[in-house]
Image 1: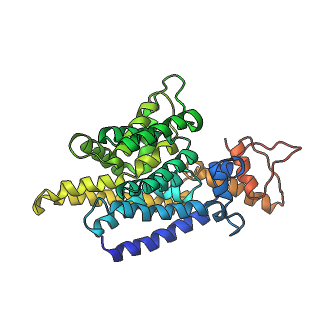
Image 2: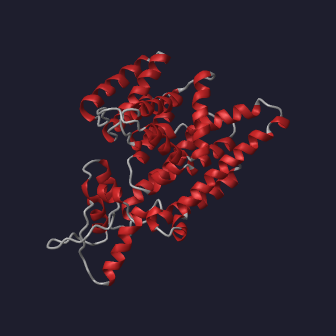
Length: 369
């Protein structure tokens, strides 16, 4: 991909992100975080409060982190590719992943964790130890499941015989386990494995996830394993192991897995370029199909409002939980009613964000069945 094409893509991509960020009503988890979170998400969701008079007030910091992640990913990818055009292509694929798009437009801690992980890898490649230490401490303070990252670093540094990194990662692992960790392992085996794979498919898109899984395995059995592979592979394996026993919170693992999508592009290029041009056609066709599926999934997310007209039962739409409370608010404004009671607390917070308080003296049937 040439620089001109990438800049053109970037223009439309950023425009689309701002469009979705502004037009999508606040979601249940976002409203819950806005009113009840006492940690990092509270400060991020209130950082630009009352700046724009729209939901962008809540989402702006996450959108900026999402755009920053593209720049950091491009910078990191330069260590993997000899040509700048290949880094442009890898960054475009990264930006089109459904998980990356949604992390940039919705309130979530994952987008900040991705920023820190990418920054750590860049500092590591530059051998800037102070930067590595700062990022690791920030991860400890910001992400409740940062122990996943520290375990990956412990294993990586043990294999690479990096004593300093091993000791510091081990110390932070212990601190995280004792004081910060909220990654629980409990209950009886429930078999959430298929649900987890469904979440990964949604995170990457189906075809990309299949190739991503193949790339991780290919590197495991054939190729050199670097720090990015260790972080992604160990987080991925841990999530699978835990899913056999309990439900896995995707934001705990996704930031550490998704950043290594660059390895997928590296694996594809290696597979392609060792073959003569006449034997590359099938691989290039497969690549075009995968990219087309990414573009299609991005189109569905960005223009999701158009698909409401295809559903007789609008509750089947994946964004229904964002819109139904907002539609209820519009109805209440028309009849000049400023209170409404629902049974689900998250929905009540959504209504509250738009100025509809909970009724104190009456109970109104819930709007989510």
